Image (cartoon, rainbow, N blue to C red; front, side):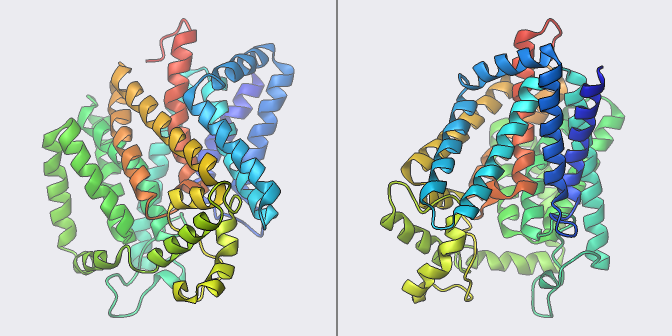
Length: 416
Protein backbone atom coordinates (compact mmCIF):
# COMPACT_ATOMS: atom_id res chain seq x y z
CA UNK A 1 0.00 0.00 0.00
CA UNK A 2 1.41 3.41 -1.01
CA UNK A 3 2.07 6.18 1.48
CA UNK A 4 -0.68 8.33 -0.07
CA UNK A 5 -3.15 5.46 0.25
CA UNK A 6 -2.24 5.00 3.91
CA UNK A 7 -2.66 8.70 4.68
CA UNK A 8 -6.02 8.87 2.92
CA UNK A 9 -7.29 5.74 4.68
CA UNK A 10 -6.19 6.97 8.11
CA UNK A 11 -7.86 10.34 7.51
CA UNK A 12 -11.07 8.60 6.48
CA UNK A 13 -11.01 6.44 9.62
CA UNK A 14 -10.42 9.52 11.77
CA UNK A 15 -13.18 11.44 10.01
CA UNK A 16 -15.72 8.68 10.70
CA UNK A 17 -14.84 8.85 14.40
CA UNK A 18 -14.39 12.60 14.85
CA UNK A 19 -17.56 13.60 12.99
CA UNK A 20 -19.75 11.83 15.56
CA UNK A 21 -17.80 12.31 18.79
CA UNK A 22 -16.32 15.81 18.50
CA UNK A 23 -18.35 19.00 19.07
CA UNK A 24 -19.39 20.78 15.89
CA UNK A 25 -16.84 23.47 16.76
CA UNK A 26 -13.91 23.52 19.16
CA UNK A 27 -12.97 27.14 19.98
CA UNK A 28 -14.70 28.18 16.79
CA UNK A 29 -12.93 25.59 14.63
CA UNK A 30 -15.11 22.93 12.91
CA UNK A 31 -12.79 19.96 13.46
CA UNK A 32 -14.72 17.53 11.24
CA UNK A 33 -14.77 20.03 8.38
CA UNK A 34 -11.02 20.53 8.70
CA UNK A 35 -10.57 16.75 8.44
CA UNK A 36 -12.83 16.68 5.39
CA UNK A 37 -10.70 19.33 3.70
CA UNK A 38 -7.58 17.28 4.49
CA UNK A 39 -9.21 14.21 2.92
CA UNK A 40 -10.08 16.24 -0.19
CA UNK A 41 -6.56 17.69 -0.34
CA UNK A 42 -4.84 14.29 -0.01
CA UNK A 43 -7.17 12.85 -2.66
CA UNK A 44 -6.30 15.68 -5.06
CA UNK A 45 -2.60 15.08 -4.37
CA UNK A 46 -3.09 11.38 -5.11
CA UNK A 47 -4.74 12.24 -8.41
CA UNK A 48 -1.86 14.57 -9.31
CA UNK A 49 0.83 12.05 -8.37
CA UNK A 50 -0.68 8.66 -9.23
CA UNK A 51 -1.61 7.64 -12.76
CA UNK A 52 -3.85 4.90 -11.32
CA UNK A 53 -5.78 7.47 -9.29
CA UNK A 54 -6.17 9.66 -12.38
CA UNK A 55 -7.53 6.68 -14.25
CA UNK A 56 -9.94 5.89 -11.40
CA UNK A 57 -11.02 9.55 -11.38
CA UNK A 58 -11.67 9.57 -15.13
CA UNK A 59 -13.57 6.29 -15.08
CA UNK A 60 -15.39 7.36 -11.93
CA UNK A 61 -16.59 10.60 -13.50
CA UNK A 62 -17.90 8.68 -16.51
CA UNK A 63 -19.75 6.24 -14.25
CA UNK A 64 -21.01 9.02 -11.92
CA UNK A 65 -22.64 10.81 -14.86
CA UNK A 66 -24.37 7.59 -15.95
CA UNK A 67 -25.40 6.36 -12.52
CA UNK A 68 -28.84 7.38 -11.21
CA UNK A 69 -27.52 8.40 -7.77
CA UNK A 70 -24.76 10.48 -9.35
CA UNK A 71 -27.11 12.15 -11.84
CA UNK A 72 -29.64 13.20 -9.20
CA UNK A 73 -26.89 14.30 -6.81
CA UNK A 74 -25.44 16.51 -9.53
CA UNK A 75 -28.85 17.91 -10.52
CA UNK A 76 -29.67 18.77 -6.91
CA UNK A 77 -26.27 20.41 -6.46
CA UNK A 78 -26.79 22.52 -9.61
CA UNK A 79 -30.24 23.64 -8.39
CA UNK A 80 -28.71 24.54 -5.01
CA UNK A 81 -25.90 26.45 -6.69
CA UNK A 82 -28.28 28.43 -8.92
CA UNK A 83 -30.41 29.32 -5.90
CA UNK A 84 -27.47 31.26 -4.46
CA UNK A 85 -28.01 33.84 -7.22
CA UNK A 86 -31.52 34.81 -6.07
CA UNK A 87 -31.49 33.90 -2.38
CA UNK A 88 -32.07 36.78 0.04
CA UNK A 89 -29.38 35.37 2.32
CA UNK A 90 -26.67 34.32 -0.12
CA UNK A 91 -24.20 33.36 2.61
CA UNK A 92 -26.58 30.76 4.00
CA UNK A 93 -27.39 29.46 0.50
CA UNK A 94 -23.70 29.11 -0.29
CA UNK A 95 -23.00 27.41 3.05
CA UNK A 96 -25.71 24.78 2.56
CA UNK A 97 -24.68 24.20 -1.05
CA UNK A 98 -21.11 23.60 0.08
CA UNK A 99 -22.41 21.20 2.75
CA UNK A 100 -24.20 19.12 0.14
CA UNK A 101 -21.03 19.17 -1.96
CA UNK A 102 -19.20 17.47 0.92
CA UNK A 103 -21.64 14.54 0.69
CA UNK A 104 -20.94 14.26 -3.05
CA UNK A 105 -17.16 14.35 -2.54
CA UNK A 106 -17.23 11.69 0.21
CA UNK A 107 -19.57 9.51 -1.84
CA UNK A 108 -17.28 9.86 -4.89
CA UNK A 109 -14.06 9.07 -3.00
CA UNK A 110 -15.61 6.06 -1.26
CA UNK A 111 -17.10 4.64 -4.43
CA UNK A 112 -14.36 5.25 -6.93
CA UNK A 113 -11.06 5.62 -5.04
CA UNK A 114 -11.35 2.91 -2.38
CA UNK A 115 -10.73 -0.26 -4.36
CA UNK A 116 -9.65 -2.55 -1.51
CA UNK A 117 -12.39 -4.50 0.25
CA UNK A 118 -10.33 -4.62 3.45
CA UNK A 119 -10.66 -0.85 3.75
CA UNK A 120 -14.43 -1.04 3.35
CA UNK A 121 -14.51 -3.83 5.96
CA UNK A 122 -12.44 -1.68 8.32
CA UNK A 123 -14.81 1.25 7.86
CA UNK A 124 -17.80 -0.90 8.85
CA UNK A 125 -15.88 -2.25 11.87
CA UNK A 126 -14.92 1.25 13.01
CA UNK A 127 -18.53 2.35 12.55
CA UNK A 128 -19.82 -0.51 14.75
CA UNK A 129 -17.23 0.18 17.48
CA UNK A 130 -18.11 3.88 17.26
CA UNK A 131 -21.79 3.06 17.81
CA UNK A 132 -20.93 0.99 20.89
CA UNK A 133 -18.75 3.78 22.37
CA UNK A 134 -21.41 6.45 21.75
CA UNK A 135 -24.08 4.24 23.33
CA UNK A 136 -21.95 3.42 26.38
CA UNK A 137 -21.30 7.12 26.92
CA UNK A 138 -25.03 7.78 26.49
CA UNK A 139 -25.89 5.39 29.32
CA UNK A 140 -23.24 6.96 31.57
CA UNK A 141 -24.62 10.35 30.62
CA UNK A 142 -28.15 9.38 31.66
CA UNK A 143 -27.02 8.74 35.24
CA UNK A 144 -24.37 11.47 35.56
CA UNK A 145 -25.72 14.20 33.23
CA UNK A 146 -22.15 14.75 32.00
CA UNK A 147 -22.22 16.75 28.79
CA UNK A 148 -26.00 17.28 28.84
CA UNK A 149 -27.07 20.84 28.06
CA UNK A 150 -29.43 22.47 30.56
CA UNK A 151 -32.21 22.56 27.96
CA UNK A 152 -32.32 18.73 28.04
CA UNK A 153 -32.54 18.48 31.83
CA UNK A 154 -36.15 18.82 32.94
CA UNK A 155 -37.96 19.65 36.17
CA UNK A 156 -40.57 17.51 37.87
CA UNK A 157 -43.68 16.90 35.82
CA UNK A 158 -41.85 16.06 32.61
CA UNK A 159 -41.77 12.52 31.24
CA UNK A 160 -37.94 12.50 31.25
CA UNK A 161 -35.75 14.23 33.83
CA UNK A 162 -32.91 14.04 31.33
CA UNK A 163 -32.83 13.28 27.60
CA UNK A 164 -29.41 12.08 26.54
CA UNK A 165 -27.69 13.49 23.43
CA UNK A 166 -24.49 11.44 24.00
CA UNK A 167 -21.92 13.04 21.62
CA UNK A 168 -24.52 14.12 19.04
CA UNK A 169 -25.35 17.40 20.86
CA UNK A 170 -29.12 16.90 20.58
CA UNK A 171 -31.32 13.97 21.76
CA UNK A 172 -33.31 13.97 18.51
CA UNK A 173 -30.06 13.82 16.54
CA UNK A 174 -28.88 10.88 18.65
CA UNK A 175 -32.12 9.01 17.96
CA UNK A 176 -31.88 9.57 14.21
CA UNK A 177 -28.16 8.73 14.17
CA UNK A 178 -28.87 5.38 15.86
CA UNK A 179 -31.82 4.47 13.63
CA UNK A 180 -29.41 4.05 10.70
CA UNK A 181 -27.34 1.20 12.26
CA UNK A 182 -30.08 -0.34 14.43
CA UNK A 183 -31.70 -2.62 11.86
CA UNK A 184 -28.42 -3.54 10.09
CA UNK A 185 -26.97 -4.58 13.47
CA UNK A 186 -30.01 -6.69 14.34
CA UNK A 187 -29.90 -8.44 10.97
CA UNK A 188 -26.15 -9.02 11.31
CA UNK A 189 -26.64 -10.43 14.83
CA UNK A 190 -29.22 -12.94 13.63
CA UNK A 191 -27.24 -14.07 10.59
CA UNK A 192 -23.51 -14.18 11.40
CA UNK A 193 -22.13 -17.60 12.32
CA UNK A 194 -19.28 -17.00 14.74
CA UNK A 195 -20.07 -16.66 18.43
CA UNK A 196 -17.84 -13.63 19.02
CA UNK A 197 -19.46 -11.78 16.14
CA UNK A 198 -22.95 -12.63 17.42
CA UNK A 199 -22.05 -11.27 20.86
CA UNK A 200 -20.65 -8.09 19.29
CA UNK A 201 -23.70 -7.39 17.14
CA UNK A 202 -26.26 -8.35 19.78
CA UNK A 203 -24.47 -6.13 22.29
CA UNK A 204 -24.42 -3.19 19.89
CA UNK A 205 -28.09 -3.79 18.96
CA UNK A 206 -29.19 -3.78 22.61
CA UNK A 207 -27.11 -0.70 23.42
CA UNK A 208 -28.56 1.08 20.40
CA UNK A 209 -32.11 0.28 21.49
CA UNK A 210 -31.44 1.44 25.06
CA UNK A 211 -30.03 4.75 23.86
CA UNK A 212 -32.96 5.35 21.52
CA UNK A 213 -35.25 4.85 24.50
CA UNK A 214 -33.23 7.15 26.76
CA UNK A 215 -32.92 9.96 24.21
CA UNK A 216 -36.69 10.39 24.42
CA UNK A 217 -37.04 11.24 20.72
CA UNK A 218 -40.61 10.55 19.65
CA UNK A 219 -39.54 10.59 16.01
CA UNK A 220 -36.90 7.90 16.70
CA UNK A 221 -39.37 5.82 18.72
CA UNK A 222 -41.84 5.98 15.86
CA UNK A 223 -39.00 5.00 13.53
CA UNK A 224 -38.29 1.92 15.66
CA UNK A 225 -41.94 0.87 15.46
CA UNK A 226 -42.11 1.37 11.70
CA UNK A 227 -38.79 -0.43 11.17
CA UNK A 228 -39.84 -3.31 13.40
CA UNK A 229 -43.06 -3.70 11.41
CA UNK A 230 -41.13 -3.69 8.11
CA UNK A 231 -38.55 -6.15 9.42
CA UNK A 232 -41.26 -8.53 10.60
CA UNK A 233 -43.48 -8.29 7.51
CA UNK A 234 -40.83 -8.23 4.81
CA UNK A 235 -37.94 -10.27 6.14
CA UNK A 236 -38.45 -12.36 9.24
CA UNK A 237 -41.61 -12.70 11.34
CA UNK A 238 -39.52 -14.13 14.19
CA UNK A 239 -38.02 -10.69 14.72
CA UNK A 240 -41.27 -9.61 16.31
CA UNK A 241 -40.25 -11.40 19.50
CA UNK A 242 -37.18 -9.17 19.81
CA UNK A 243 -39.26 -6.03 19.67
CA UNK A 244 -41.97 -7.42 21.94
CA UNK A 245 -39.32 -8.18 24.56
CA UNK A 246 -37.55 -4.85 24.06
CA UNK A 247 -40.81 -2.89 23.99
CA UNK A 248 -42.09 -4.66 27.10
CA UNK A 249 -38.87 -3.90 28.96
CA UNK A 250 -39.02 -0.24 27.88
CA UNK A 251 -42.62 0.09 29.08
CA UNK A 252 -41.50 -0.89 32.56
CA UNK A 253 -39.73 2.49 32.74
CA UNK A 254 -42.23 5.12 34.03
CA UNK A 255 -40.60 7.90 31.96
CA UNK A 256 -41.19 5.90 28.78
CA UNK A 257 -44.86 5.35 29.61
CA UNK A 258 -45.31 9.05 30.32
CA UNK A 259 -43.43 10.08 27.17
CA UNK A 260 -45.73 7.90 25.07
CA UNK A 261 -48.58 10.22 26.00
CA UNK A 262 -46.71 13.00 24.19
CA UNK A 263 -47.35 11.26 20.87
CA UNK A 264 -50.71 13.02 20.94
CA UNK A 265 -48.85 16.25 20.19
CA UNK A 266 -46.05 15.01 17.90
CA UNK A 267 -47.44 17.01 14.95
CA UNK A 268 -48.97 19.77 17.01
CA UNK A 269 -46.10 21.12 19.12
CA UNK A 270 -45.26 23.94 16.73
CA UNK A 271 -44.35 21.88 13.69
CA UNK A 272 -47.72 22.51 12.07
CA UNK A 273 -47.07 26.26 12.23
CA UNK A 274 -43.59 25.79 10.80
CA UNK A 275 -45.01 23.67 7.98
CA UNK A 276 -47.71 26.27 7.24
CA UNK A 277 -45.02 28.92 6.86
CA UNK A 278 -43.23 26.63 4.39
CA UNK A 279 -46.50 26.33 2.45
CA UNK A 280 -46.76 30.15 2.39
CA UNK A 281 -43.25 30.32 0.91
CA UNK A 282 -44.14 27.67 -1.67
CA UNK A 283 -47.24 29.60 -2.74
CA UNK A 284 -45.27 32.83 -3.10
CA UNK A 285 -42.26 31.22 -4.81
CA UNK A 286 -43.64 28.03 -6.45
CA UNK A 287 -41.09 27.62 -9.24
CA UNK A 288 -37.65 28.36 -7.82
CA UNK A 289 -38.20 28.67 -4.04
CA UNK A 290 -36.64 31.19 -1.66
CA UNK A 291 -33.07 29.92 -1.95
CA UNK A 292 -31.07 27.11 -0.38
CA UNK A 293 -31.15 27.28 3.44
CA UNK A 294 -33.20 30.48 3.40
CA UNK A 295 -36.30 29.14 5.19
CA UNK A 296 -34.30 29.34 8.41
CA UNK A 297 -33.36 32.97 7.78
CA UNK A 298 -36.74 34.15 6.46
CA UNK A 299 -38.88 32.60 9.20
CA UNK A 300 -38.96 35.81 11.25
CA UNK A 301 -40.15 37.88 8.28
CA UNK A 302 -43.00 35.46 7.59
CA UNK A 303 -44.00 35.41 11.26
CA UNK A 304 -44.36 39.21 11.08
CA UNK A 305 -46.64 38.82 8.06
CA UNK A 306 -48.57 35.92 9.63
CA UNK A 307 -48.39 36.43 13.42
CA UNK A 308 -50.85 33.58 14.00
CA UNK A 309 -48.05 31.22 12.89
CA UNK A 310 -45.60 32.40 15.54
CA UNK A 311 -43.83 29.52 17.30
CA UNK A 312 -42.26 30.49 20.62
CA UNK A 313 -41.14 33.83 19.10
CA UNK A 314 -38.48 32.11 16.98
CA UNK A 315 -36.88 34.35 14.36
CA UNK A 316 -34.58 31.66 12.93
CA UNK A 317 -35.72 28.06 13.08
CA UNK A 318 -35.69 24.99 10.79
CA UNK A 319 -38.90 23.77 9.14
CA UNK A 320 -38.65 20.25 10.66
CA UNK A 321 -39.54 18.55 7.37
CA UNK A 322 -36.86 17.84 4.76
CA UNK A 323 -39.36 17.64 1.90
CA UNK A 324 -41.03 20.97 2.69
CA UNK A 325 -37.58 22.47 3.20
CA UNK A 326 -36.49 21.46 -0.30
CA UNK A 327 -39.77 22.50 -1.95
CA UNK A 328 -39.89 25.89 -0.21
CA UNK A 329 -36.21 26.65 -0.82
CA UNK A 330 -35.48 25.05 -4.21
CA UNK A 331 -38.88 24.83 -5.88
CA UNK A 332 -40.03 22.27 -8.41
CA UNK A 333 -36.60 21.38 -9.82
CA UNK A 334 -35.26 20.88 -6.30
CA UNK A 335 -37.98 18.56 -5.06
CA UNK A 336 -37.91 16.49 -8.29
CA UNK A 337 -34.13 16.07 -7.98
CA UNK A 338 -34.36 15.29 -4.26
CA UNK A 339 -37.13 12.70 -4.54
CA UNK A 340 -35.42 11.18 -7.59
CA UNK A 341 -32.21 10.86 -5.54
CA UNK A 342 -34.02 9.11 -2.68
CA UNK A 343 -35.76 6.67 -5.04
CA UNK A 344 -32.43 5.93 -6.74
CA UNK A 345 -30.77 5.27 -3.37
CA UNK A 346 -33.53 2.91 -2.25
CA UNK A 347 -33.47 0.93 -5.51
CA UNK A 348 -29.66 0.62 -5.43
CA UNK A 349 -29.52 -0.45 -1.77
CA UNK A 350 -32.33 -2.98 -2.22
CA UNK A 351 -30.61 -4.37 -5.32
CA UNK A 352 -27.27 -4.70 -3.52
CA UNK A 353 -28.88 -6.47 -0.54
CA UNK A 354 -30.52 -8.95 -2.92
CA UNK A 355 -27.43 -9.65 -5.02
CA UNK A 356 -24.54 -9.68 -2.52
CA UNK A 357 -23.30 -13.15 -1.55
CA UNK A 358 -21.16 -12.17 1.44
CA UNK A 359 -23.27 -13.27 4.42
CA UNK A 360 -22.44 -10.30 6.62
CA UNK A 361 -23.02 -7.66 3.96
CA UNK A 362 -26.23 -9.34 2.85
CA UNK A 363 -27.59 -9.23 6.40
CA UNK A 364 -26.25 -5.75 7.13
CA UNK A 365 -27.67 -4.17 3.99
CA UNK A 366 -30.95 -6.05 4.26
CA UNK A 367 -31.31 -4.27 7.60
CA UNK A 368 -30.06 -1.02 6.09
CA UNK A 369 -32.82 -1.21 3.47
CA UNK A 370 -35.29 -1.02 6.36
CA UNK A 371 -33.31 1.84 7.92
CA UNK A 372 -33.44 3.74 4.62
CA UNK A 373 -37.25 3.55 4.49
CA UNK A 374 -37.52 4.56 8.14
CA UNK A 375 -35.04 7.41 7.67
CA UNK A 376 -37.01 8.74 4.70
CA UNK A 377 -40.17 8.70 6.80
CA UNK A 378 -38.50 10.34 9.80
CA UNK A 379 -37.57 13.26 7.55
CA UNK A 380 -41.26 14.13 7.34
CA UNK A 381 -40.97 15.30 10.94
CA UNK A 382 -37.43 16.69 10.94
CA UNK A 383 -34.57 18.02 8.75
CA UNK A 384 -32.36 14.96 9.25
CA UNK A 385 -30.96 14.99 5.72
CA UNK A 386 -29.37 18.33 6.52
CA UNK A 387 -27.70 17.45 9.82
CA UNK A 388 -24.08 16.53 8.92
CA UNK A 389 -23.55 14.34 12.01
CA UNK A 390 -26.41 12.16 10.73
CA UNK A 391 -26.61 12.46 6.97
CA UNK A 392 -22.88 11.96 6.31
CA UNK A 393 -23.10 8.46 7.77
CA UNK A 394 -26.12 7.77 5.58
CA UNK A 395 -24.12 8.67 2.48
CA UNK A 396 -21.07 6.73 3.68
CA UNK A 397 -23.15 3.55 4.10
CA UNK A 398 -24.72 4.09 0.68
CA UNK A 399 -21.28 4.69 -0.87
CA UNK A 400 -19.81 1.49 0.63
CA UNK A 401 -22.47 -0.63 -1.06
CA UNK A 402 -21.99 1.17 -4.38
CA UNK A 403 -18.21 0.88 -4.11
CA UNK A 404 -18.53 -2.88 -3.75
CA UNK A 405 -20.79 -3.11 -6.79
CA UNK A 406 -18.55 -0.86 -8.88
CA UNK A 407 -15.29 -2.58 -7.90
CA UNK A 408 -16.77 -6.05 -8.23
CA UNK A 409 -17.58 -5.31 -11.88
CA UNK A 410 -14.08 -3.97 -12.63
CA UNK A 411 -11.73 -6.09 -10.52
CA UNK A 412 -10.46 -9.62 -10.85
CA UNK A 413 -10.78 -9.86 -7.05
CA UNK A 414 -14.26 -10.69 -5.82
CA UNK A 415 -15.74 -7.99 -3.59
CA UNK A 416 -18.92 -9.85 -2.70
